[in-house]
Length: 114
Length: 113
Image 1 (cartoon, rainbow over the protein chains, first blue to last red):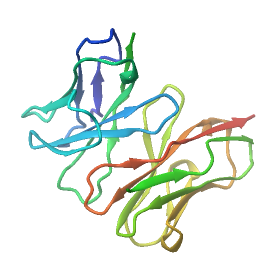
Image 2 (image 1 turned 135 degrees about the horizontal axis):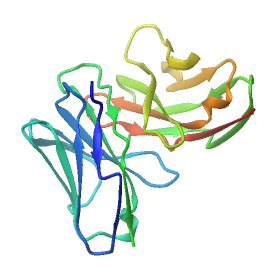
Image 3 (image 1 turned 90 degrees about the horizontal axis):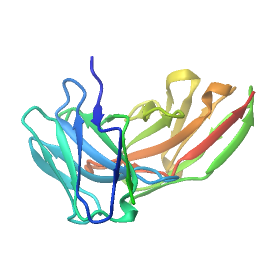
Image 4 (image 1 turned 120 degrees about the vertical axis):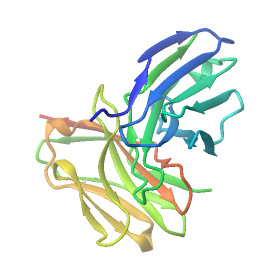
């Protein structure tokens, strides 16, 4: 049973560039959430996708956008990168109709902006 | 605004010592509560969760947590820690119909052999 997978594992970009991060949810899950975890901080919620639509969004600027595909995989796009976007980006999945709300996390993508 | 606070940012213990990590949240309604652990170089894993019922919940690796509604707390405990418990511990909350997890800043636990 495959867990949540993310790619790439590490990425180095320069300010102003654009980046796309990818996530495949755990088998059987249909909901994907993205989090940003800065060094020494807890994860911060970016947004959640369900049925290919953004269902909820945290306090992140419009430079952060996403997409969910029919197979439930998801992408996180960040435009006009800033130094402060350097962080670990986590993807989590769950079954949207479940009462448990338990989310399963991937290993993350470490983004460094120079 | 809903928030989660973890009282201890860094904890250092010797093996066999008892552990208690504090977690308080600010929300007056129904909550689902979680403790996640992040071992060095690994991804976040669920330690335990509370949705309803018995407020004392048991998780993996001998951890337990007690939900005290009147204190808005969900403290994590382990009677005797091991070196392998060295990790970052996060408390997280689903508040009401909110679909996002709200996280504490985390507690870094170092257990000396």
